[in-house]
Amino acid sequence: MASQKSLYIVKVLLWIVCLNLSFTWKSSGTQAAIYRHTGLCTHNDRVFEDGQTFYRGCDKCYCHKSGYVCFPPTKPTSWPNKCKRVPTACGYRVVYRDNTAVECRAYSWIW
Image 1 (cartoon, rainbow, N blue to C red):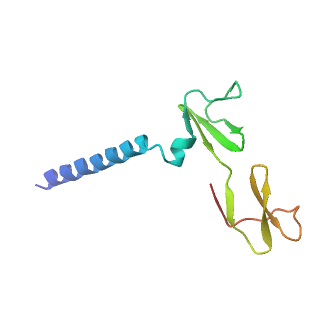
Image 2: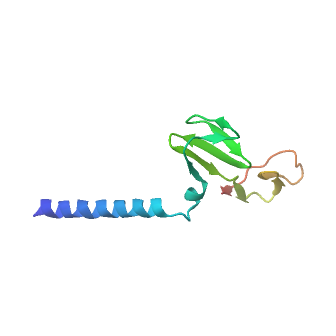
Image 3: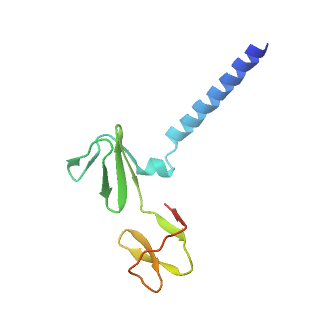
């Protein structure tokens, strides 16, 4: 009786995992699906190998065996009061208010 119950639980868990994977693969609205590219890892007529990185505009891209994935620059969300956020060409820097040449550590960042 216990083995039948265990087998039933395993079947249900496998079904849930398969369903979850199915939703993940079919979902086109997620950020991962937007920045994921299949096929050769190429950019500007240059072929990159697994493990190499390159920049596509401001996005940083990582090559893997089935393609590459790109992520936009991160943005600081919080920093000490003595610091401020300064926009750059591809994102932001967090610097001290009284000395903008020196970077200040942000508490958190998001994509």
